[in-house]
Image (cartoon, rainbow, N blue to C red; front, side, top):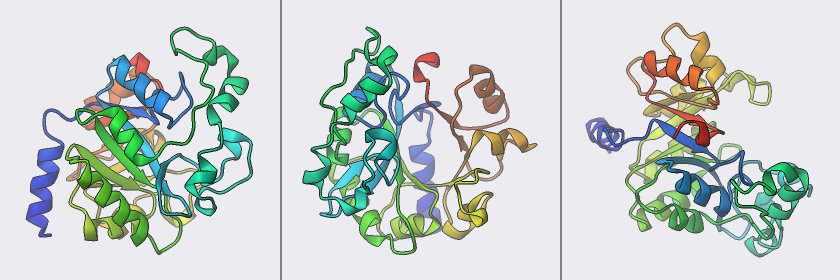
Length: 265
């Protein structure tokens, strides 16, 4: 695809209809993150944009979860990429969330408890959100070989007719792999956190991937005199303070991703 064509697609996707606020992993402080309950609640609250993470199970299915390992959301030391979807679908992450966050699960606002919530497939998530919700689809890929995941995500988004989406990643090779097969705008994620490889804590992912959009962490954006703005649009994560959001918007940031969508809409 020519650079001019990508620019036209970028302008079309990030037009006036593009949301300012994205629900991070759904309504993730009110329901178990990256579950159908979390996405349905974000939509019910009025969110026009949702961010979520996509892995590929051992058997090829695209599944939506953040971490590669299930320790944090299910207390199971298992890696998503090592499991079949049949094995993943047996893990009740909703019940684990209800046990560890009883004050949320019992709240009438959230509509809990969440017993029975599983790791959903990408198809399930897109169907739950509907075509009017804009999506930031983060590719979760390790290493250099990302073609299988990127191609599967591109084909799934095309099959659902999704145009109001972007595809993002920390991994520049995942972005490059997607750009070879997909036409949606791409975003390079970067942050100063020790959990990220040293060479990827600034703008290295942006330069190596050729991504269309900058997606810095809030610490990086607020430490920058220009809020990281320049020739590329900027989407900042994770912004949970309305005051910080207002400061970022005043500096020219396009959108923010928040754990507390209920405070912004």
